Length: 276
Image (cartoon, rainbow, N blue to C red):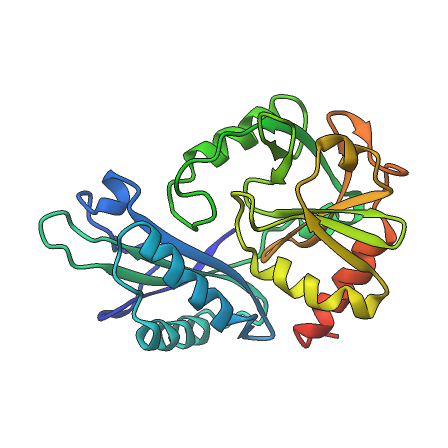
């Protein structure tokens, strides 16, 4: 992805090449920062208010003051206008600031979309199950993502596109940056938020959209074997949207090709975003 525009709260638009975070920022030194990532469709951020609500929750979890909502909303508008991209990725970042000053830093960043999204929707993802021990920040959008990225790297070493995080008892949790779903006949299953997983905004959107698409819903605690026996599976996230999963640990899920529920829900999501 290419960085297109950056707006710093209290400073305004800055060059994407300009330094905006100090080396002694606690977000850099200790990972004490939170973020949100969302899609922009036709110049409009999708479910911005829901992302700002989660932003508040994550900040409280890591001991940061609430993000300045009005300032961030204005920064988003300025960044999107400067980027000039109808479809893009928007990131919000809220760090603790320099360790001696205790003055938070807020950024709104607009980037181009990953170039391989369309290809991956057609092909589907290959996942590798990776054992996962959630820490105390599970469910928060903290920048402390080293463990998530290590899980993805472990999956890549097994020739997979991404990791499927599973608990010690083989309970399915999530992917490093996405929620996970699968289909049994006309029923869609997804791990419950009572587990230590992220409350995805796209996940919430699909819970609203699925019944109208003809699918019943079941949230719960499920073993990996349940997913492996499913007729299809997919991930949900803001950037990847509804992304089909075609294999786990080298074994095909269902027919081993993208399934119908993923296609139907992808279209429903785009309709909800006002792009169809």
